[in-house]
Image 1: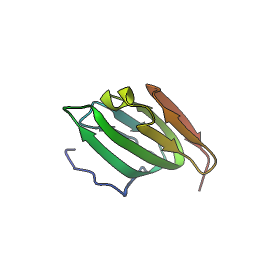
Image 2: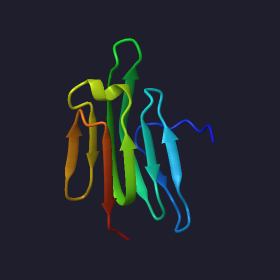
Image 3: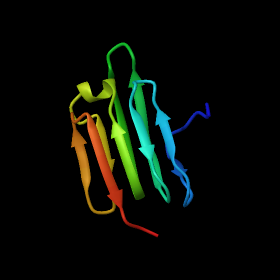
Length: 99
């Protein structure tokens, strides 16, 4: 609780774990058991609401509810080994099978 994340940090959950992350633009990321997500980039300017959120979901079930960043086109990108989701969508949910 309260740990500050940095760009290129990896978030992992165990077989019986889950995690919820809240970002300063009010975006939220939730991940279930056996998950792995690389937070490739996160930047946010609270004055202009401009920034970027790029995450790579290597495995597991992940849902993302975007905050103020979603007001900017293509500010949010969620990548998986086989697809990329981006745009002004408010909610993303993916499940990636993996080791």
